[in-house]
Length: 264
Image 1 (cartoon, rainbow, N blue to C red):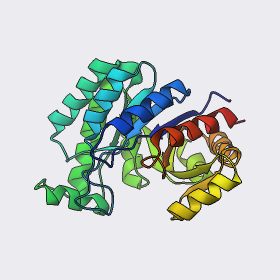
Image 2: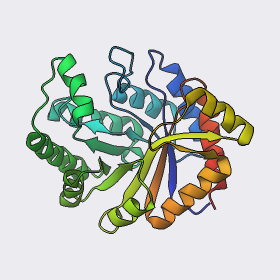
Image 3: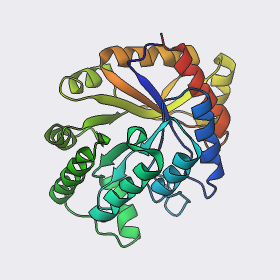
C-alpha cells in the first residue's frame, strides 16, 4: 500500500457497553490500521435519549490497552466542556498514550448538535463565540505539539485551520473538495461506509442498512480504489465509520483492515 495515506476507523460508542469499542480497537491494532477514533456526542445523531459513551473515557481505555494506533475524537466540540477541561482531557490522554499517538480532532458544532447541549443545560453560544473558542483551543493543542484536525466543511473551519497551523478533516466529500483543501493544509477524509468482502455480503449489508446521502458503498476492492483516488487528490488520512460496526464490531473492523491491504 502507498504509505502516503493512513487508514483509520471509528469505534462503536453509541451503546452502554464499552467492551465492543475495546474489542474493535484491539482488532484495528492487530490488523494494521493506523488509527481509531470516536465521535463526541451525547446521543446518536437523531436519536435523543439513546446511549452514547463519553469520547475521552473510551479513548483513555483504548490508549491504555493498545500500543501503536493513533487515537482521537472525531471531533471534540468546543463548548461541550469548558476550555480548560477540554485541554485537560487532551493532556490526560497524551499522558497515557504519548504525544505521537494523539490526534486532536476539534470542531465548533452546528444546528444538528445544538440540541445535545441544550438538553443537558449546556450553553450553546453564537457561531462567532464558538469560532473564537475553537481557534483558542486549536492553537493551544497545536502549541502542545499534537497533530490537530479542524473538522467541518465551512469557510470558518478552513480559516481556523489556516490561522493555527492545523489540518482539516472533511466529512463525506469527493476528490475535488479534497484537492482544493489540500492546497493549503493537510487534509483527511472521514465518512460512513458499508463494505462487503464480496458482492453477496455487500448485498446482504445493503438489505439490512439501506442507503443514505454520502454513504460510501462497495466491495473491499471498490472501496480501496476509492481511497486511492482520494489519496491522489491529496488526502493524508481516510477514516471509515462502518454502519455495521455496532452489530459486529470485530468483523466490521477486520473488513476495513482488508481494505487497507487492498489500496494500490
